[in-house]
Length: 213
Image (cartoon, rainbow, N blue to C red; front, side, top):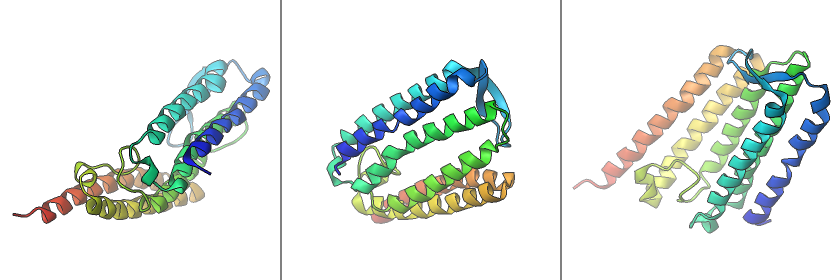
């Protein structure tokens, strides 16, 4: 299956949240949860029209824009089809997760939204980390430091380190979701940010090392 076919099929996945929204709309309260704290508590509400149809529409728009950019990347033909398929699944899956989370919470059913979202994000980080090393130098996917963009060797080494950062952060986040430990969520988020800063510095160090006069 080509990248273009994978993108078209990913668009069809947005029918799932539409069906969920249409089925749930009559029974939902006028105001529904739209935002959750790190502890999984609802801290903002919006109308059911916004939650059930507005949010999916925004995510669909983002999916179309990002898909267009990916497919029109001048180096798209050099990229792994599996990597593109993974990226094309991110927003459709996120949309379904957000829909289900808001609907279940609105009905009063007990659900820890933080564990659900963190578990999904952690698995996504692990999957991305696994495929980062397979990406080739391009303009849309990857850790695009100025020095990695200028050199294939720098790109490869930067992404090997980045892969380890994403997988390690994902494993910490997954443990946080399984054991419901807020401290692990914080470690996950800060570790991901700190790890990417280290990757940025490493990429620059590689550049300076290879360009010594």
